Structure formats: C-alpha cells, structure tokens
Length: 266
Image 1 (cartoon, rainbow, N blue to C red):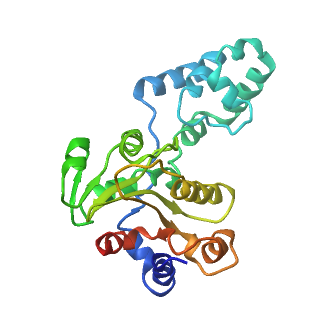
Image 2 (cartoon, rainbow, N blue to C red):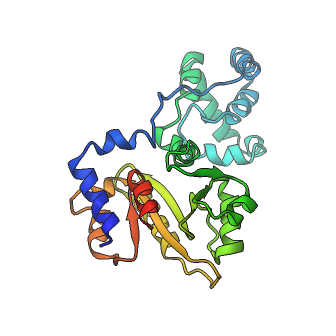
C-alpha cells in the first residue's frame, strides 16, 4: 500500500475527517426545484379544464415528473407515443387528477439529491487556490511555465490537454491536472458516499483512470486517484479490502485533504 493511502486511512479513522472534508465538498441545503411561472399557469389551466394530453406533455417537460412510473422515461423521449397509447396516457393522467394540483407541484419540485451536487465541488475547491499555487485554464500558460501550477477547466478541455501532451488516450474527462517541480500529475476525484453498486462503479472508474497506460512523451507524468468517503472505513467492504490488497507502492490513492502535502512532496 502506498504511503499516501495509509495516511488517508489514518486521517479518516483518527481525526475530524468529515469536518475537514466539508471544506472541499460542502453540502448545501437542498433547495426545491423551480417551475417557471408560464408553465405553472398552464399546468393549473390544463388541470382545471381537464385537457389531459396537454397536462401530461407539459409535466413531462419538467425536471421531475410527479409520478414514479416505468413508462414516463419513454414518454419524455417520445411525446408522439402519447397519442398512440391511449390506455397508458389515461392511466397516468388519472393518477395526476387523483393527486390534485398541490401534490403535483409538490412532487414536481422535489429538491435535487445531495449526490447530484457533488460533481463540480472538487474543481470549485481547486479554483479557490487552496493548493497554494496559481490555477489557470490557459493551456499555453500551463505548459510554458516553470512554476508550480494547476490547470483547471472543463472535463473535455482537461482530457484534450492530457491527450495532446501526456499520451492520455482514455475517453474520460479528468478532474485534476497539475505541474509540481517539473512533474505532471493527472487525477480523477470522487467522493464515495456509501457502499453499493453505483459507488463501487465510481471507485473502479477512478482506478481505471489511474491505471490507464499513457503513450510515451517527453514529460514525466504520474497518475493518481483522489478519493474520499467510505472506502477508508476499516471494514470488510469491497473498496477497503481492495485498498489493502490490490495496489502497490507506486499507485497513489489519497484523500483530497492530503493533496497539497502530496504535491509539495514531489
């Protein structure tokens, strides 16, 4: 096991890990989704006038349909199916009328799940300069400087830069690219909030990025996985077992909290 993985496990189990992590992944109060005023007025009108197809179509346009039903996703993608499938349409509309307007608006404006907020948080934290070096989204500035620097941009821009200069050929955006003491570091960052299928897949995805083969270039490049969450809990869960058994000393998996220390150790 790599030293930085060991430090991450120790940090998570002996210190105020979650309090420190909150600075990187702050969970905001889940504000309710909004329906624009024009759509809101139309929903009321179509409901009161029993204009069933129009009511169904405008609700299908919203981020969240008020009813969890296996046929909704199909209708969202193909509105023409509403006319071709009267029984399905009548069934869904009947449930909407039974719910009433208040419950329709309540269900259609449910807050976003916390997990859906996490995606951009790591890059937002990087952009605030907490790593103690300049952050840029300018490719030429990043490649030509001799100073320590972080390149922070869109997933696509970061993938393109890594492909262009560092032999990175995986069709997957990156969360982290930096240059420290002449060494380039590529990484993917994830906050693994629980055990289970999707989170295990997220873990494996980050490991695949770290283990992807790079084509030869003139640059010294290292790949890391910046992971946080339940994987550091000492237990028999799949992620922690893998941390203990499946990685050698050269494979760096570490908490974002330790990222600055790691970079300045290079």
